[in-house]
Image (cartoon, rainbow, N blue to C red; front, side, top):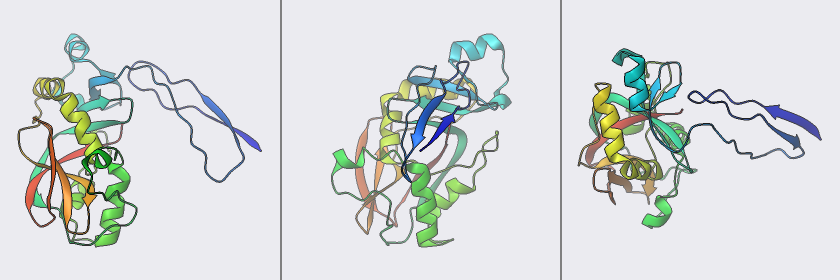
Length: 219
């Protein structure tokens, strides 16, 4: 087979080690170890990550903040400073390729908000996937496009809610409040999982209900 070496971009002030593998199949999965520990950071528009203390000591202005980054052992993402709306989720059509489960424990294993968002819009069509479309249309300060987070990503927010809101406050952003936020994780054909990231309540509601939408993006 062919040996391929991948060198990921720098995360924060550290560098990921290049990873090599021999290509023998059409699909290959590999993992990367980044220099930053799991936790909450402020992401600069140049994609570097800083703790709140580092952000303050560097004297960065708020317009250089791309958003608040959350890193865990399962996923990493950036939460927008603003970009909040109350919207219906979309039409009652099951979207193939997007997690659909009636079991909360399984729904919490969905960390694929970015790909979910693309599939939802493609299946439902423009004008029929309001929450996903709203997120995908949003552009972060560094040029990244947004997505509607999955339930597992919302769980990471609940696990770090105090630090997230502190970082948001520091950069003049809008925090996560004690209200229902739509996820991109399905609960059958008619319902969608939501989470209150302030108290960790996760449940499901009809897709036609109005809930809060917050935009995330990839690191």
